[in-house]
Length: 327
Image (cartoon, one colour):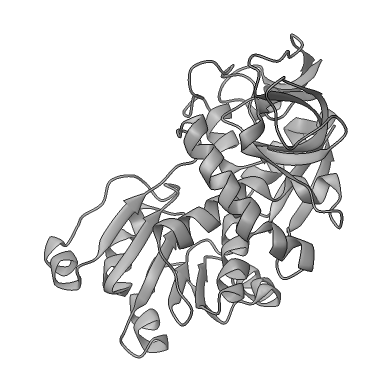
């Protein structure tokens, strides 16, 4: 079969579509999926740079964390799915290939109103956002959610999910244009963060109360402002580290506010843990996708043969929403 392969770590131009060994079922609960489209994520860029190896058992030179396709084979213990079903899901690696083998508990049915390319823009960002702001962040109706890098796939998913739950959203971006475009997805308040400063504006918008939940895809460079921005008993959910991994912490402010900092990553979780978040996604998010209350955001679609071009485009930071590979 064909799969995206990293020729040399650190060289995006070395990415190509190459022949690799065919996939076979490894357990009775597995399914084999013919992939029609796969989403790209920042984690793929980090893996291509040689700085984010997958868990044991996955080829470090075949990236990919999400896919959409059609089941072509089922293990004997698979329940609820059959050959021919359109499905999507998350994997710990090797998702950017013609075929993906995965545990059937970690997939969900693609709504009929979504194409494969649209579906490929869903799993990683919507499962990440839903798990972070609701399961970990316990966002409720009437709460304020602060989302950093709001023009990213996770950011746009978080806006829509929070709006569907009747929460208020404040979004930040270094690019004013992305903030303006995010308004069509329900962004109510926006802050340009070219200087990494935003706490005063968050305080103004919330009348001094701060944000109940902060979804941070940036990391260290925003940490001090996050603590200033967080509400009493607020929750800071740390998802990304594009702004660094080492920060100063005002422990006094955290004690006074009784604030919580929670780090999260989907990739490192066990199959059982991924099955739980996938089921919550299927129960709570799929109905919103079916009704159109939330929608995937596809920026550009590339043929898998132009994988290097797709990665270069993602690395340029020009994308708004998801970059997709079609197989």
